[in-house]
Length: 258
Length: 371
Image 1 (tube, chains in turn cyan, red):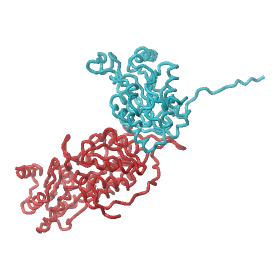
Image 2 (cartoon, chains in turn red, purple):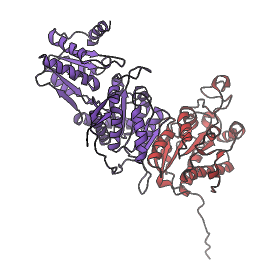
Image 3 (cartoon, each protein chain N blue to C red):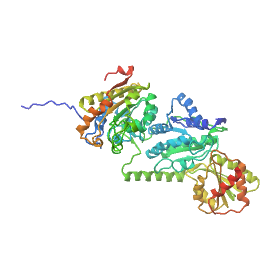
Image 4 (cartoon, rainbow over the protein chains, first blue to last red):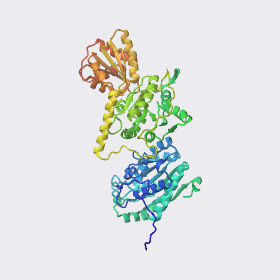
């Protein structure tokens, strides 16, 4: 007697994901963030109407990993480029994917004004408290005392100031419909991150203004840690400085259920 | 269409609209601001995109993004603002998307002033942004020409997937003259086969200026160079006046060229055999025509509103086969026709030498004139 074992595919590559290997280091959470976005694009049926804007930084090659149209911005200018695209193609989905050096340092003006205008785009902001691509320099989000290659004795707040909390700052602008911070350090928080990314795309598809999801992420290579240590560092060290939470969910957005 | 009294900046704005510009991104800066203001009124009423950006850095990157969709897009600015756009222009050149930029040049360096100048010739003609690329640069001398060249700029930018800059000095932007606008073109251009608009029913597209492998970047640089050589072969434009029998050739672009035209006519009235070559494309430069003139004329006079930036291009074309003299006014000062007439008379009636940098002798004459 032959027994048929029923099977169900529970995990596969999203259509919005390209069939290539990423260049990211082992233990880096960029890949997770990418996958979450790709899953959301699939679930919302947005792949064919989406234009992504890649940044400069470790995720400079993000355009290789998504199976949708993409452009590659200059360092920090992704929100301006996204603005240009969205203004001429308002019915398309436009998102930027930016790191902390890109968004919170060199691109501070562009992100602030895109948000202030209520530019109807989605921003996924990877905060790993360091410059990854150039080899581990201090970022505007580096923690006080954090050792980097450009703060070898640890970030001295007397001379280099304090970490920039973008989700909180952006939440103060009237043009922002959705501003939250999530983390990618464990499965539960990864699920919450995905839900937030979904919300950020829902906000755009309903024309409810600027939406940003800040994702606390790891950089084991430049932090000098194992992947596991890095995940713990996010939980133990980063979250106290960058509390997870919903900093702005406008009333029209609050009604959305995903 | 009837001729009407139009200010240069507004004429260039309306000409862009008639040429089918679908998005404008800019930032206020004198002496260009009326262009942005006109766009803020007209673009929304036509259902097209207008946005006053937070900076010229943002404006040019908005233009970059919109250009990637294959739409007709533009910005305008003046010297210090264009300096801020150089990063974006380099990326646009590297991504090979068409963009039109109008630069209403003012006095510099630094904050300088808001008077008409041609001090940005080198920045605009010989590069500006990082990397190896060329922009097509058109230099109008009247409001009518500003209109015509603005329309041409969109066609050239699209034809070659290149940056086309209208280099208008402050005079051209600010003066009012009778001019005729073109008819309104319909917005029925097909979507280019390189544009990103979402990968509906096709393979995804990526637009980028990154070529990480040096071999790929070299191929890209060669492609850009070959395209530039095609532009050099096909798109050189200039205007000639009284050059058929000329013994002296004056060369000037934009406002300086227009002032020189008055001087040349006055000199002709005196019986001096002088003509004028006014480059319309300062990039690609009419080097071949100037080289040809080098075997006809006894001497050249280059007139500019800078310290002799185009002078170097003329000298290169002449290659020492005739003396090249220079006259310039600086910092936002516009020369009078009499000043250039005096220079023409000097060249006509006194022996010329090929010795030394013409800027040294010019500076001596200018300083004694200023005393």
